[in-house]
Image 1: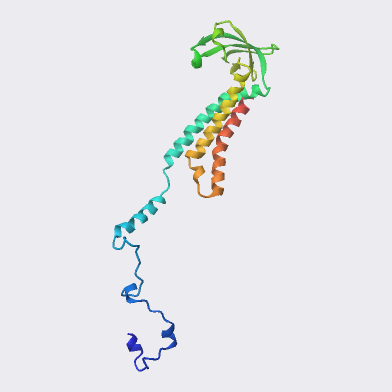
Image 2: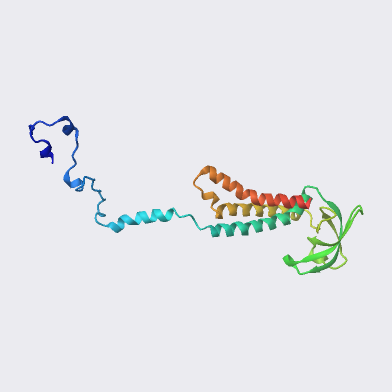
Length: 225
């Protein structure tokens, strides 16, 4: 074709367009002029090796399975709600919001961690008396019916009278709030909030993971006031 274009011209004199045109060697182009792909040594002709990276990239685009994250979200939210519930009353008593009085044991069942005691709480000023209140922190040697213990409640409508004092009284709310924070961290981890590629989206997702359990805790604190 080049010979036909140069017909009637001096073959030793090239035009300006032909001088600026780059012609690739025939070994580097197909019959239609497209360049031949240069494969790395050892992979030339191995079409199945070239397909494997493509398949891996396609699988990487698939979103993760949401079921484990949803299960972790629901389960840890329930556990955080339990910790918030058992910590609300001891927290208010620790900061000074409560009423002192006397709790009289009426019945105790179980022992150790399974011990459950109920009784009657009477405020120190005699303004109210609560029957059937659950008494927490009763020593094993004082579980006999009729035993009187100094205790505190958060108010007249409180369902629990706390007979423990000192360090054990602070451990009740402190360990509970630490459990709430641990559940929030688990939600952020197992739902994938900490693994988002975008930094701004990751911060918002982690904030939302902590906001749920903390909001539940505030609700229980307001109910126990």
